[in-house]
Length: 147
Image 1 (cartoon, rainbow, N blue to C red):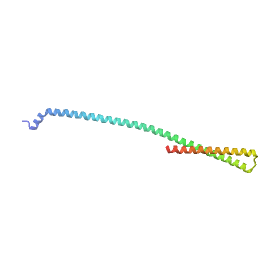
Image 2 (cartoon, rainbow, N blue to C red):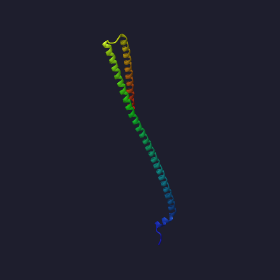
Image 3 (cartoon, one colour):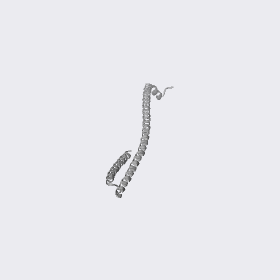
Image 4 (tube, rainbow, N blue to C red):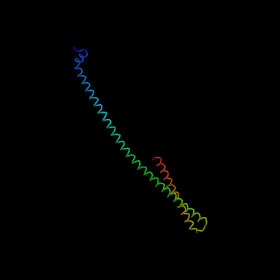
């Protein structure tokens, strides 16, 4: 039997087929290299995401700590504000008492002068406490806006 033309072509083109095998082999090597490169990129992305996750967890813990500090500060601030208000009330009671003493004229001339001096001291202290309270509340309002 005689070989047909197609068989002849295959037989004639065998060196070309070997060339195709080389080209195909090179193509496979390139694909493998691309696959390895993509795998490395995936690994790098995974590592980057893990690092970001660790960083976010750390930030969350710090944020939790800051929230705790903020709550403690708010409690302490409220306590100080309450103390200042109570001081103002106490000094206003003292002022009223001195006013009542002056109004009844039951004090001697020297006692009245002392009472007026004490009343001025009380008024100055009340004003000082009010300014301090205003400063505390102003700073707290600014801080709460920031946080």
